[in-house]
Length: 193
Image 1 (cartoon, rainbow, N blue to C red):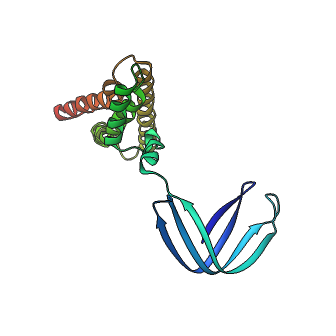
Image 2 (image 1 turned 90 degrees about the vertical axis):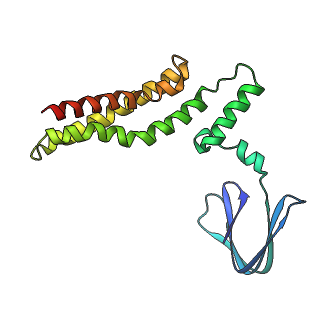
Image 3 (image 1 turned 45 degrees about the vertical axis):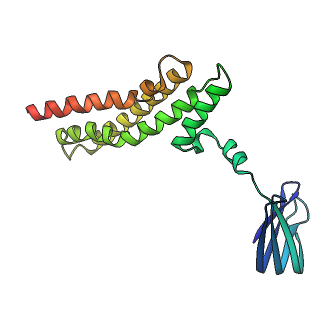
């Protein structure tokens, strides 16, 4: 099955019983040779009716994307840790005064999210031990409140990072620092009782 754009926000649907492909790096394309199939193409963008046509053989040419172009077209959220650091390094070397704070914010935010499970567990266990099972509504409200407070701190850290108030590694770690400290204090208090 191949979806081939034909303009006006419509696509031709091509189905074939057989098919082969051939990569042509010199022309930067992939050619799909399809056999024994049909075309289904809308008559217009607004129409619910289709043209239908059978074929014995048909070729579809698809341009190859250059690997460097693919890497350049990635958004910050799609990049790996290494790509984020490479991009920040390349940007700060190539363009003086360029703002790389969003890249570092994304990098440290991922580390913060990875550690958030541990930090939230540090806070949750002493609270769960302290509250009784019969107080389910209180437990739910407390969990929801902690969740909201964590994300408010995360958003505040992001805003402070992007404004340049403090470095990204400090501000994106703010929720983990606050919750980790609170969790350790609650554990110490639990040990005393």
